[in-house]
Length: 128
Image 1 (cartoon, rainbow, N blue to C red):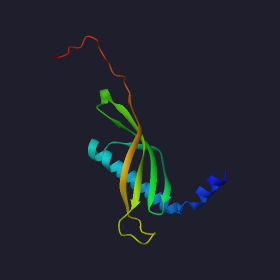
Image 2: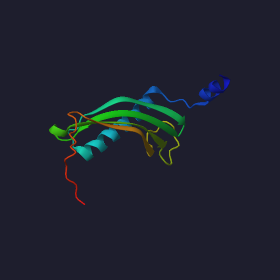
Image 3: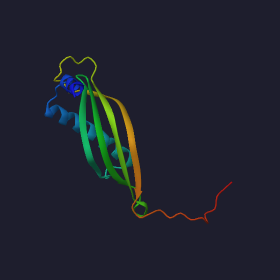
Image 4: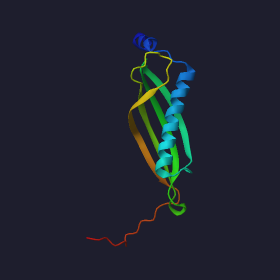
């Protein structure tokens, strides 16, 4: 219990507004990337998005989102969970500056759900 308290008490202080700005930046990055890849009409739903400060210069942002893709007859729902690390921009000395650089993205879980089901036949021909 004491170890947990000491670890928690050493965490850097970030305001709710700073956390929200960082989360909004990551959300916008993900939305823009998906829309560039799949088209601007792709609706994206975030189930959860939260951030954890690691140090005064490093943030971890956790995300869980889903989107629909495919033609109407083969529509699928893609769900992705993961986290990314953001580092304060190089050369920034003022802790109030809001430029963060994406260090890494790690996808921990990805699932695809076929909304109409996918037909698989044992009679399909294969080429050799």
